[in-house]
Image (cartoon, rainbow, N blue to C red; front, side, top):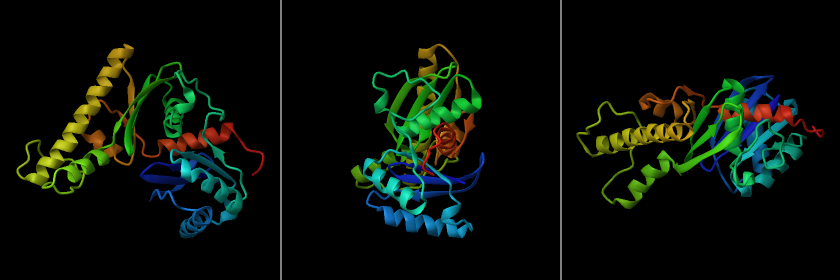
Length: 258
């Protein structure tokens, strides 16, 4: 079985693959101070709930955008799972040309998403990932990664509103029943939801105008389903797109030390 781990700035998503099928998955808080031993013990506990032992894991694939955690994750894999992990980075083999000024600067999760999406849909694509930051990535019909853009995530935006406006409370991110709110909470929820979905659709339209081609728009990340409900441009959602990309990249980079 393959353990795929996608470490983001806010959440870490882990999944267990048996062949090409994901059989278990978890969404966890990312803790930058977690040591290799803490990762190992935590993983053992998680797996015990689904009746899997550590020695049943035969491979590990990692996408990580939090540099302080990289060494801990690699040590955990080698010490507790007896596997040399496949870690997404500039030296990794991927079946996708990167048409950027500085390819090494691109976030691992963005490349993994692009690989997974193109492998599945084989078309002109825009991938929107709703994480700590919201990212847009363009893959052309030939399967080349062409670039994208980054903006503050919906959670960051809402937290900034709470932190900087003394009379505004923290509110849950939901799809409101109406645009015009009747109280402060409704006004905030409406503003963040409809403002954000409108911005998403507008950016996608501008990307399509610039490329001159319509694209299939794929959304991923923890809030992808919620945001897609209010979007006119998002056509597909896949909360575990990054894990699927990790599975593919692992298969292309089978390590010899597992």
